[in-house]
Length: 346
Image (cartoon, rainbow, N blue to C red; front, side, top):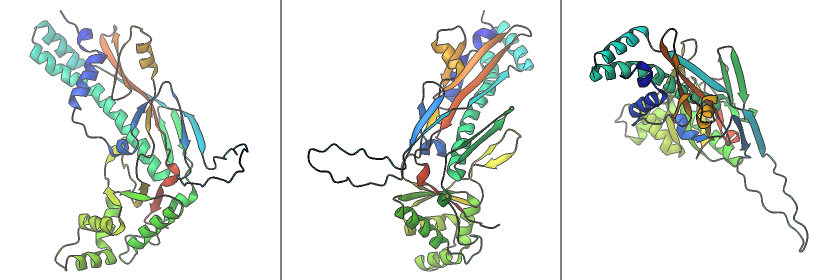
């Protein structure tokens, strides 16, 4: 007869999470920082110099080539942080599971197992939240800060002061030249060899578009005064006028203290170039290392690098399911983004 230890395993938890997420849509940060796997826990990447082309220097014939100074190119090295939490089987669920196993009722056994697997599955989901939080911290500040369980880390990706800018005035004031502010960012970036193609903000910024005098007047003229000016219409007009894609992103996360936060802070708009901004690197956890070394631990790897480990607890009888991850984004395009405060001096 199967026991709880036979049914609650790392492979079963991983299979349950995978089946539930077969149609999962990627988070915004995953599209900007695609996931890659690393061997180990160290991370290095090359921080670019705005991709500006520089012409070749002249040389005489038969002379040795002059070695180019890779000005502005920087290799960044760091160690990725380690994340780990675990859950135990709830006592009531454990009793029900054992009773249904003894009664040889597979339907009810599966029902209880689903409830049991939901707990570690939520930890796997939490790994995505952690990664998205780090990626959004990067594009809105250039700094990742992590603090929980007595651990604290800060990763400063070295954005320049000229990349953190203020609007000409508070965008909530209807007379502010929002279009002019955005055009200035685009032109200033172009002068540095950067082509801005995207902007990301939350609804605190989006609402200012539909109340802005210049935008409202332009939309009225464009539509012969026959439409109400909504946020969506204002965004569409800005996209056509400025030639960039504009995305309102209002997703939130809950921190370690249970407080909800927006991934994109209020009164912030981020301007980005085309393509990937970096990569989300996932390293090898100690648990995955145990698996590859052929040890007896019950370990499965899911979600491109999240390790699920199940351990038998004898006294009291239980199963511990641990979810762990080693991960950190790189930011190769760090010097090509611009972060604007739309409510300066507030």
